[in-house]
Length: 75
Image (cartoon, rainbow, N blue to C red; front, side, top):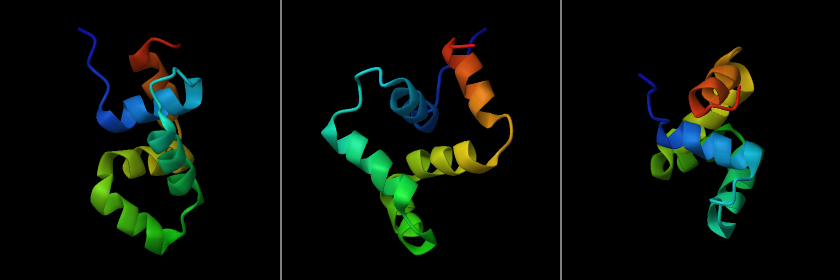
């Protein structure tokens, strides 16, 4: 049984594949998360915990992005 993507995983898929579900707010949120220093990343995580966590894992966790792609059916 295929599991559903989490909010953070879907956020990554939308960002990386530009599916069109990222409006201007989420597009700018992605840019902000990617550019944020640790202090501001902590602040952002209070309002967008799943999105921040997903981007952190995307950057640092080996195999995470591949597994998200597989779950989404892109690999």
